[in-house]
Image (cartoon, rainbow over all chains, first blue to last red; front, side):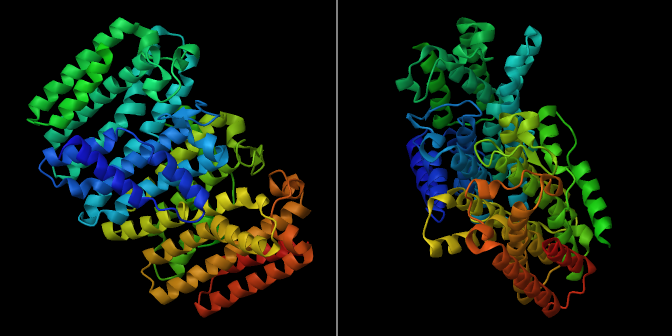
Length: 292
Length: 292
């Protein structure tokens, strides 16, 4: 499959999985952010990892879509006035600007239950014990020990002033807030394909490094890009004195670190003997956006 | 088991299931609301239904505790400034008054993942397919088609002025916002005990009627009680012109309706041939609070 084939497939399933039922405001709010045009990186990486690991990517479609729903949920709640208070997301008004903060809070809550339900409901080809393995991954990386741990540290990061602590904190935020969803995507794809533990560890290592690189690129672009390029308000991190790689290491060193991480990712792909045009494209795209 | 034995057991497990890990603010916030003293009605009803249906209630402990965590999650988010904006809960400052709205939002999110994880992690005596049956119940009643549907209608209820629509809306809110968690509690207890469909339907019917009665009692008490009796701000419904049985039917008719529902519940218990001191106590307690 090519990147665009995966993206179209995922968009079709996301559309099918969320029909507008009653109460329609709730389902519209859920569907609004989930179906905003996006790169669908996490589900694409889930399906491609499944395929590269010798599995049938179609078995992983419910899981891939669940992860995209979970990602959308984090965006909805992140943008809330009591959180980052962002009015735009992917070039459109954020969820609470359209549906109000109360419905946006509840539609985020709903997605947190809807996403794993998609896995149990539509993974017809997986055995019950495989489904539970996938859910355990999901619960682990989506929850208080995963993405949410990163979000809490991100919120609290301004309080700390020790430079060594800051470096550790930033790494922790990158790993949990960003890498954990990529780990979830790639690990579940691999688990559905029945990979062995050694491969699973390498895949996890790739996702860990990739996630950090991805978030560093996002932080760098927040500094050097415009609203039009990013689809969301930029320059806010600096304005708010937020802890990012740019504030901690400066622009040049951040770019160097990012290149190192991407090289590491290429290396792990080789070790895994994964020949993937899609992963090459994804890694190159991040590098190229930095070179502008 | 007596009521207090169940309550102590549930409190012990809730304490054990949520240890304070890093980030400690997050886990403290989760644990704060989950462990506030409460009647533990939902988990008690889950365990007792399992027992009355011929099952071993210990098999249902993880599920019962997950439902209490889910219930706590709804309280945390309900109390947020962008929702009901309540400063007190169970006689204590609400979660966001202690931890701030951002952490309260995230700890509610975390509980939505933590709760079903408790089921998969600790239900050692259940088969994988039984665990998935329990999770399907959980996802169904906890999500956009369950509790959250009720919460959305509750928020939007002020907009509507047609009296017949109001009656239907109020019933819908009661069923989803309140009955659905009781249905979840009793159905999962029964499913773990392997009841047949006929019994399961009757149990669902009991929970449906019980939930409506329970919420009517709450609405009536909001009108006639004090902060000290309720542990939360009272009289707010009236002040805010909220749709409740009292605003729709008046105090006397509401009390009559409530008595009818409780009688219906006694009738279903008889049909089920459930002889339960605990359910008798629960039903009588609601009736007695109305008789004051």
